[in-house]
Length: 298
Image 1 (spheres, rainbow, N blue to C red):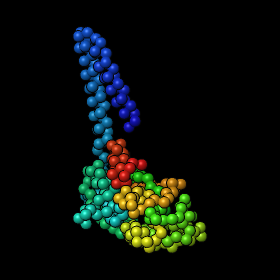
Image 2 (tube, one colour):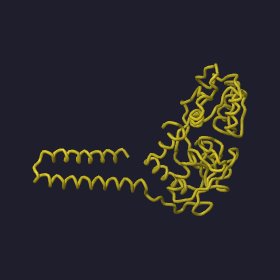
Image 3 (cartoon, helix red, strand yellow):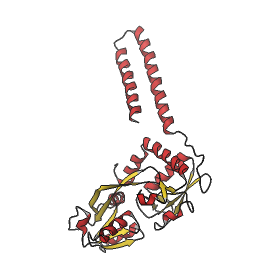
Image 4 (cartoon, rainbow, N blue to C red):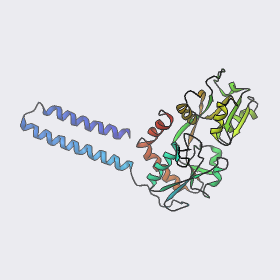
């Protein structure tokens, strides 16, 4: 992309150079300059067209196995804002992952069908109830044993969210010793905090909930001291409720990446999705989507 921009910049520089020279030339020379400008303009148009063509290159879907022809069926856990949630009508899915999934379907030339599924057990539905899972799924070595992943489409960290009146200071997870915390069950946050407790690093009272929304309700009601959650989710909550929540800590020592979870044997779908992600990246889709749902680009 940078090479294309540089080439385009050089061409435009040539155009402006020729324009500047034409004002100093006689009328006889100006006609020659105009021809040169036209050539430069045509070159610019050609390069722009080539860039657009590359960005929208048709993705080969031959060999891709789908549960329903012409449709990408996607497992999601709706109720994990700002990645997945319902609109005010209570039925329309909205969120970062929803926008991504719809853009993905458009790139692949497929309709998109969302299957709302509880997080606990969501991966068991791949190749049975849906073709893939797009639901803020962290790529881990353990998960790679039973599924394959697309290229990452967003980075994430673990964060600690507290109420504005929280009086302690949290500079690491070990500073939470003795606190009551809330996590969503079977998430990376749950696994991480459970490991800290299991190894005796810290003592915590852990409330593991089915929904992340319940965790934030507990925090707001004073039932827990903190919520440990994906930093991207924390950013979404803080952007929507700046007076209710404060991000006390974000662990950037172990970055995570989210990807599309796909059936182990469906490598053709993995390839197609990766091509679509590359095109969306080049077009700036992810930067715009991050800015919209999380308040700022990474």
